[in-house]
Image 1 (cartoon, helix red, strand yellow):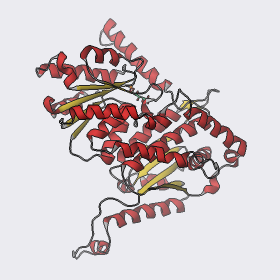
Image 2 (cartoon, helix red, strand yellow):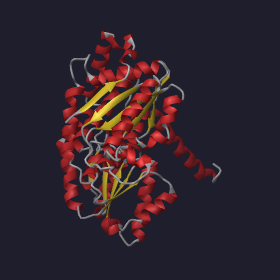
Image 3 (spheres, protein in one colour):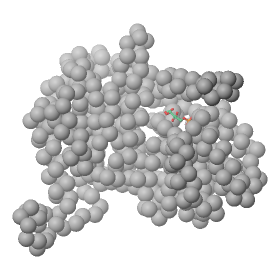
Image 4 (cartoon, helix red, strand yellow):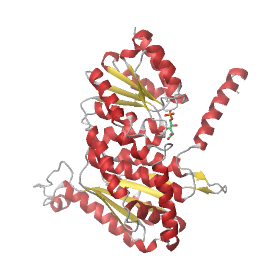
Length: 426
Ligand code: PA5
């Protein structure tokens, strides 16, 4: 089982970032953070009771063939990533992750209540988008003859166990409420019930997922700091950031990992786009991509556009399925493909792009996983979460808060109150 990383042009790493005292200090901050009571993402895989609570729900509702997750941001992106990367496609999944009336109308029209389980996820329990969808779904069920006293047969909640509006509702309706640990932020919560319950319904081996995360700690916590992959990654990205390469492209060569890129976008953007204590704005801008498809789209920009992007190129060494390209079609371009398999073509395109990036002096990191399975997924999740935390600490910001998002939420509610008071023009 391996997950490996190599770097193009390590000579670009800035001496200041490899200086022993800076590295020691950053590492000390990282260890203090991940071992503190306030920040729980790094060890949450060890909280076995969280998985057990999800298994109980799964046992109870496993006859349901349609799983609907209602949540936004970290309450949806991680689960979407898991289901699309590893799901067995035996159940229908719907993610209600927006307040787009047209989309919601389409989504609800596909749902038969008797076959459905609605999973409402909100760590705070106070997110307007999620609560709006909850209100609509309650009314939609009532219109279908399902009474409030029976919501417990259709709903499961996940929220902060200490402070959340969902706690009151779940008590009132007798709906089971799973825990989103208070010390695990939304975008770091995929290995909690937020992602574990949908993973079970998608047929994903959650034990292997959590074991993969545990296994990755061996290399993430490598005490030889000169060889530590996490520190090397952070040094590489921050060195390039200083040269103006301030955008981070994540480009897995896999359709099933397309949502990994979108999960990474939130993790990276919401954690690192901040003001330092001195008031300086910092951040690395994430760019989602996937290969080979984006070779016919964004890659031109990566090669010849502004020199501001570092590409994290991810390949799957041994895909679970393959196809022969052998054919007796006469056309030259088809004939050329005939001796190969589809996975060889993918590998050729991946390596071709690496070479072209290198020649164009465009920096990249080369990430490889043996196969797309729960174990490697667990490893990658903890690697990206840890990298985000370490880069944030090295940038001297708090990677775990989101004051900008909170401000937007507050102003939206203020606007609604004004509408109520003064009519539609506010
Ligand atoms: O990472 C975060 O904390 C946020 O993006 C949240 O996931 C998002 O705002 C949704 O919040 P909640 O789960 O409280 O509804």
